[in-house]
Figure 1: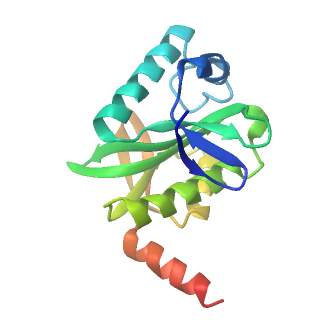
Figure 2: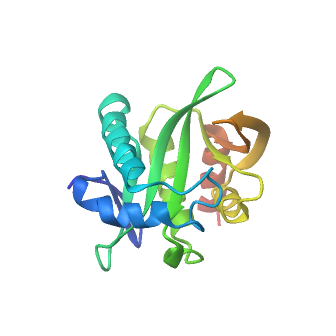
Length: 180
């Protein structure tokens, strides 16, 4: 299985069919899916996996299986999505974790690793995250990743806040942290 990125506690790798049961449990959890229109069925989880495999081929990236290094357990889906907001293509960092993993800092850890990877190795000038306004946990992750609310947008027929950080803002953060 191809590792895309590692953080101190997680491995991000492409999804494989054997991840289906772990992913389906997460997608069926009403609390995890609270900010989505509804939980996914098992069939919709299979469609999700197939869409990710298509994205890996088409875009070279997608949402990845978030795997705990310590146990090898798949605990979420975290990665990149190509989004278009107001006719501008952007790279989005998205994250969703199983409820048992909430509050441990895993999403923030992975989001920072993805941000650094994107600005270091991919040709992007801005990274976004589209977050429902009442999703306080996800908003905290975006803010800890140096992102700020850029604007309010309609996405997938739902109201979202568009968080963003530019490559220049990221470089300035890195330079400031190097000086301390």
